[in-house]
Every structure is written in C-alpha cells, then in structure tokens.
Image (cartoon, rainbow, N blue to C red; front, side, top):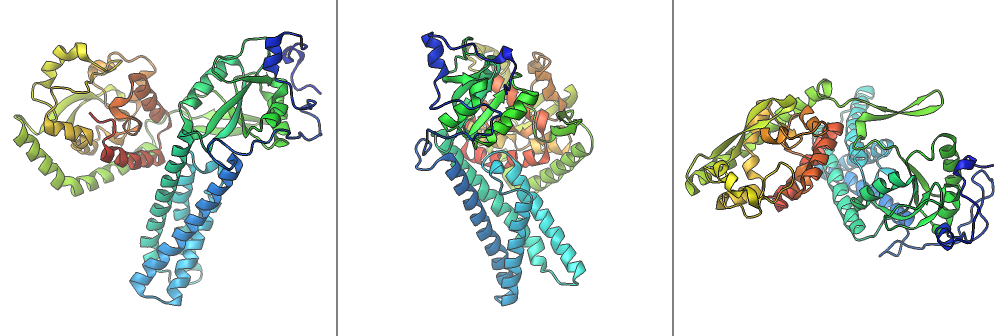
Length: 513
C-alpha cells in the first residue's frame, strides 16, 4: 500500500549519478510503511561523539541518576531537620523517611522523571513545584483523616528546602548536560523530513541551540529530482524512504517540517516509526509560541492546536503583579543598606546626583520615568551625538565597548547590573515588572514595526530573557526575538526561571557594559 499519492512518489531510478548518490541505496530491500514486517537495523551506531554510550543509554543513565539524587536529598533533608529540631529518634527517622518517599512519589506522579521532560524545558521544574504542593495537601489530609499530628517542621521547613534542593540539583545537572551537548556529546541523531524551505528554517534554528540535543545528520525531501536544501547535511532519500533511512542510519528522532506530510500519511509514518524505535516530532510552524498558550484539542477525530491569545490582563496578570509587588518590597528591605552605600559612592566619586532619571516607554506605549544609579558623567546624553559615528550596535540601539562617558565606578555598576536596582521603585509604582522586555527609549519605539510593537503588550522588566542571554552582547534582532518570545509565552514559572538565571549572570558580569 502506498503511503502518499503518485505525485509524491520519486521518479524511477536512472543512471544519473547525482540522483544515485542522493538516493543512498539501503542496506537491504526497502520495506513498505504499511508492511507488518519489522525493519531490521543493519547498521549499528554504538555511541555518540565523544562518549562510550549511545544516546538512549545516556538518557537512561540521566533518568536514573536524577531519581537516585532526588531520593537521597528527599530522605536526608527532612530527617536531618527533624533530628536537629526534635532530637534523634526512630519516630523522627520514620517521619523523615516517609515524607521524603512521599515527595519523590509525587514528583513521579507529576511526570518529573519521564525521559522526555528531563534535561530540557520547564516541565521537570514545574513537576517539583507541583509535587511540593501535593505533598503538603496529602499531609494535611492525613492529619485530618487520621487525627495525626504531622510535624510542622516538615511542612514549613523541610518541604521548601526539598523543593529548592531538587530544583537546584536539576539545574546544575542540566547545565552539565548542556555543556556536553555544546561539545557534541549526548546528542540525539536526528533526521529532518519535509519541504526544502521548512527544512532550511528548522535546521538553522536547531543548530543555533545545541543545548536542546538535536544533531541533524540526514534529510528526506519530497522528490529527489529537485535540488535539496543547502545546509551541509546529506539528503538520504525521499519521503517514501523515511523508515528504512531511519533504520539504516540508526536515527533517534525524526522531525517533520512543512506541509508535505500531514493527515493519514503522518499517521502511517508514526506507525512505521514505532517499529524502528525512533521518536516522531512534528514542527507545526508556530514561531515563538509555546507553553501555556498552546493546547492540543481533540475534535471530530482530529488533533487541533488551539493557540490562546497573549494575555495582557486577567487573573494571571493580577497574580504576576502581586508576585512583583511582594518581591520588590522584600528586595528593598534587604537591599536598603546596599542602595545607600552605592548612592554615597556615586556622589563622592563623580560630580552630579546619585540617581539618573530617564524617560522610557512602558506597557501600551505609556511613558514613565525610569530610575537608575548614575553610571555616566552628568552630560552623557549631550555627548552621545558626537559619538554616533563610533556606535557598535545595530538597529536603534547605541553602545560602545569603551564608552568614555562611563565613570570608573559606573563601569563596575553596569557590569554587575547594580545600577538597575533603583528600578525596584518603578516596580512598586506599577510602571515595570521584575521580569519583562527591555524598557525601550521613545526614539527606539518610533522605529518599531508592527511585530516589534508587540513588546509593549506587557510591562518592561528589571530583567528578562535578554538579560540572561547576553545582555549588551546581543544583536538587535536577537534581543527583539527574545523579548517577543517572552511576550508571547510569559508565565510565573518562566519568571522564576529567568530570575534564577539572572543571579548567575549578574554575579559573573557576562555581557555587562
């Protein structure tokens, strides 16, 4: 049975050497997608580059090491805390072990140990957060149902510690995995299939983000008679060859891009790939839209992708405002001594006020006065016109690696983003958020196109994806792309992840000028 109609079937093979090379003869007879005969793996790839283990073996090891580490942390943290607070006894040991095991079980219930969720994306961190809430709820129900006295030390002390420890350990483990992937290790051998234009875009995006673990090793296109994509990856066959190419090339993942494989053909491909052991991934072409805005909706036997509108008001926005307000108040209370010291140092080391006031554009195009510690000489804005020819930034931005207007103290403040701390007052006033797009200047907004203008759908942030991805080292287009990605997909969980990563960026001073 043919999987695609006659128009998609490649032409009969000829003596044309270029076509022969691109077809890459299989190691044995090709098997139909619809056949019940199993595909035989004739070429065994024993390991990924730089490692003695295949990707599947490394994935299994990563999964089990995560479970073992979580179990160790969840058993030791509540037990140690109970011993410290209530003394060493079998009762405290029993409580500590039981609660630790319960927490690990809840992480599993929330799919925190599924291979697809480990090492990439926010789902494993969300699983830890939800597991903490479920564990607390289960303990409360147990206390009420059995009239038992659950140690408050566990609920108010151990649970937050376990959640923080598991999230931190997973973050460190993920960073190690991403470093290995940047060196070409622990990669999933990937076959990309679809039309030429879609393959071009997909390969470029995946190559720019090796931390996701896709090593593009082959392509399959609709017809071999048409020139393939110029992406430096061999074309191994046509769409009808996909399952056998997967087997012969020992691929881990098949990514379908474009519209050449849809409906019944895509369904049969998924059946065929089940016999090869490879995973099927479909790239729907929804650029920069993911997470809570995308929902798979089964309707009339179809899988419809429902894309919710980007939220700029509603309950989630109110919750974000409450979170920003509480965090800003807490940060100001803790950092007040630091702010006073910095203000004095700025005043003493250079003439002028400690704070710099500048007009920026906020949500909905409304302007506000943004506060910063002054890091330049007083007439810095007047001097900018004379430095315009030396501008090293693209787009409407202006930056210089060795800006003569920056003071000695200001250089340190900018490198570690200390000059941004007064913006906590802007957060209190509701003009900014803790996390959001970079607050633009009015002349920058005047140059925005329709798509860039979507940055103004949410409040600008004290930090954001731009802050953790390179800061001033980013080209204009990349900064815009990151801001739009945040606008389209923001969530409290994403905010927490960005704030976590911001600490490392600020301490290291990477990308600060």
